[in-house]
Image (cartoon, rainbow, N blue to C red; front, side, top):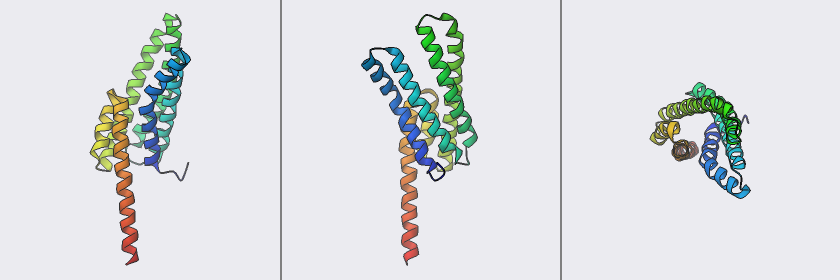
Length: 170
């Protein structure tokens, strides 16, 4: 993954975050089983967190927050899904683990949101700053804003690269 554009990796992660709730509901309906929906949603979110991790690994500003948030998101998603499945299947004792996992999810979303906010400051992109704030409470909407903001940054970079190429021709 060394040659990958970190902004593209972050875009892929945001795209997966936007798609995860819909995919979870649809797979749960298709399988006529809420467990299948939970598992598919978690798998997609783990993939999104992995993309966030790979993207933030290559970026200097806010990368520690993004890396920590991504790793915590992966751990807490797995713990929350396992404990939720146990609670849904009658193991009330797992409700404490579920509560702790949900708190960890919130902290992870906060760290990832703060990392995106810092990224928005670094690139002077207001959509990413707003997306970073929304990632905390409304991850799908925040991810959508981040997706649009990252697209604007990449378009701006392509345009600057094209202008540089045109200037060197003269």
